[in-house]
Length: 167
Image (cartoon, rainbow, N blue to C red; front, side, top):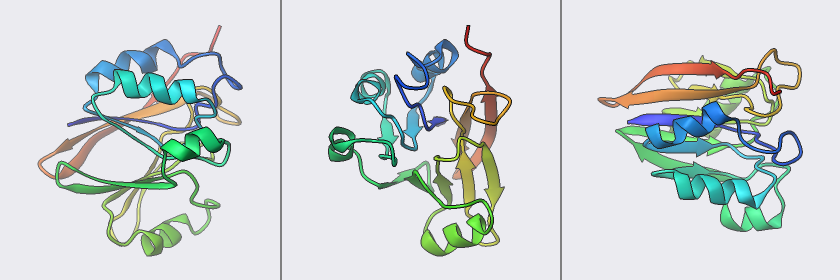
């Protein structure tokens, strides 16, 4: 099962559209995960129409129309792994401990908000993934997204993709 992970698209404020390399990944993914801060409803509609399955949550910059269609926290069993998706997890310091306590029944938690890619595993075995942002790199060197594979109940081939600068 191939996963495509993104967050913090902030359209149309940070970019006019999703980057072409990210859009090219959509038909290859069995599951698309978006960890919030869509900002516009059109991005949700686009991903729903082009994804085999979309799992998403709303973020702090998402208005009432997105909040009406998306939960604050999403849960899904994918290939034998228990996934959660949430936008905010708080500051980096202490993140592993906080998330392990808040989400004790998960194997993988996908989150966003910081625009900073993150891939760690807590002492309890919870894998924390933040794909960064494909449209707003903030203080990062590149805009990013992630892909991963779920095989035989394991998360494998987690890859952070760097996007070329916008022209």
